[in-house]
Image (cartoon, rainbow, N blue to C red; front, top):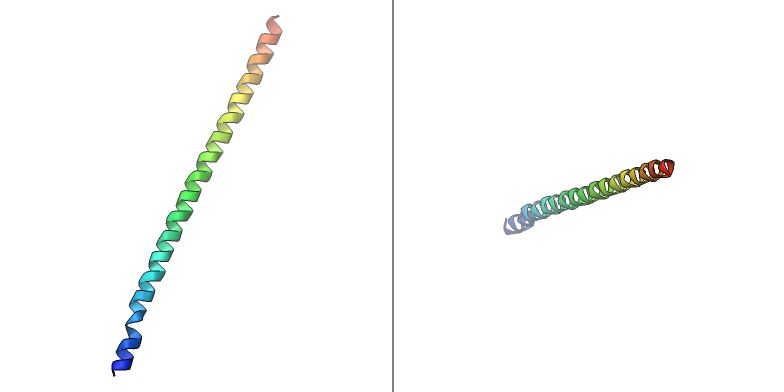
Length: 64
């Protein structure tokens, strides 16, 4: 009987470790997604600035 209880004891710990690993993975994936989203926003902002600069150059070029 003692061997059965010893065998079943590690199972809750294994399950707990698996759950913790999954939680950590989800947190890591969420952080990566936030970073990717920020990178996309910065790239979009840079493109908008470039387009605004191009429009300004064209407008200034027409005046002179």
